[in-house]
Length: 493
RNA sequence: GGUGUCGUGGCCGAGGGGCUUAGGCACAGGUCUGCAAAACCUGCUACAGCGGUUCGAAUCCGCUCGACACCUCCA
Image (cartoon, rainbow, N blue to C red; front, side):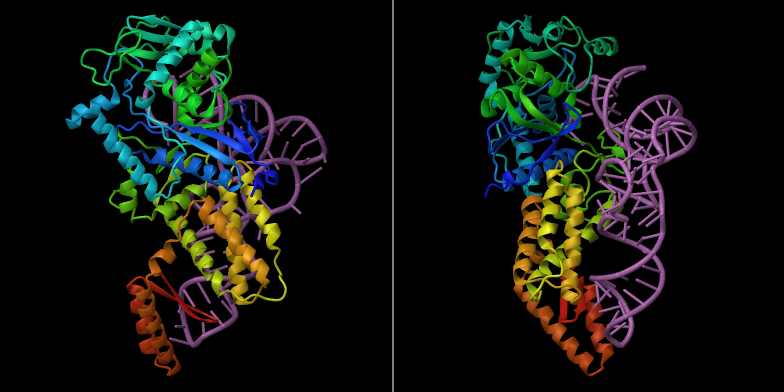
């Protein structure tokens, strides 16, 4: 199915600051690169939000029938903790602190990263390349940039010559910065530098004797600069120019700016047609920060083992919460917010679980085709998941109204409603039917059904003390009975 | 200091010059029910402040105040 012929997607392009119609370079194919994590500690919750946004985008583009090659890298080469020439890299530092090999650090947190993403029901990317697996490509890229005159070697390190580059290119076009402003506003950093100018950035760093992660190169033993791996891997797997490049807002400058510069210096063309940036996640109105303690790990949020939240939240509830705001907005993670989302989420699930029980009519009083297109319109408009969810709640109302007999749907419309709501809720938003999963254990259902039956008998005999006792004690056990026109159902809280 | 994003009703959160009563949560009233819950119906009607453009602005422009991010490792 090639829905993309009918559904015109608009993407907010950070490069132009406008929403633009999405037109892939090769019809029917999409190349998308997203900057992945540096695996030196547990994956950051904000990181999860960013990747979740792109997971949703990946899912939607696939649903539209695009053949998507989604590349998300793993940064496993050590990069310096700051831009000064001295200092330890993050992975080596962690290795020293934990008294293990750097590659053990990499392995441990790569596994953690995958586990967390699996828990949140992520689709795996098409390719997940590592920086250390592409040292040769990075060295070749550096050589090309030197040949083209945009980099210079000093003492075994190679730097990108930003000033030279800016004479013929536009450094800063993504982040809307002018080189002159950068020159005037660059702070003095500690440690002497081999750079010609503070704005220059490292393509290759000479490894000091104690530096463990090191590779041979034409300039001596060393390791690649941080910005380089993304350029090397994106061009290797997606070509010199590809469709979408995503990442967190904080990567816009300098990381993505430098990627553009590297690509233009090496290949002569700007690498990306649509730059997309996901906005930050805050915790209780403030940025997450390890140093101030205002931070929570994904597993702590899921387990409830933390000081910020009143309870544990299901992965899908968190996913739903995140989808309720636009990926381009700052999102504030709060207990009240999660609690509200949780209720809404279960209301949506309850309605979806009622779909099979609905009675079809000869005519429809609701136009399901119109509603369906509204769902597409929402996603076509820069992946506006909050609006999509608003439409899903319209469908919740439809379902309940049909159940109440207020509205009617034909067999065909009922099927269309069911298909569409399933696609958007589960395939595209990536939610999981938690209620069904929990209450789906047949033996428990059978047991509760017996209790429901006994309660009905008690009610028929006007033995309300007994019927209320059954209802209330089930409620205390976390099982809620719901009396409807066609009998009683239950849900597990 | 520079760059950028943004300030929406009790809370969260979309939208974006003149019909969105967006949506969710909370709250109030009603229907249903033996009572409740659930569901349904109804109500609560906002766009930081001050100017300007316009027939008309929450939506455009300017200023003020405030928040956040980046400029230094961070998604």
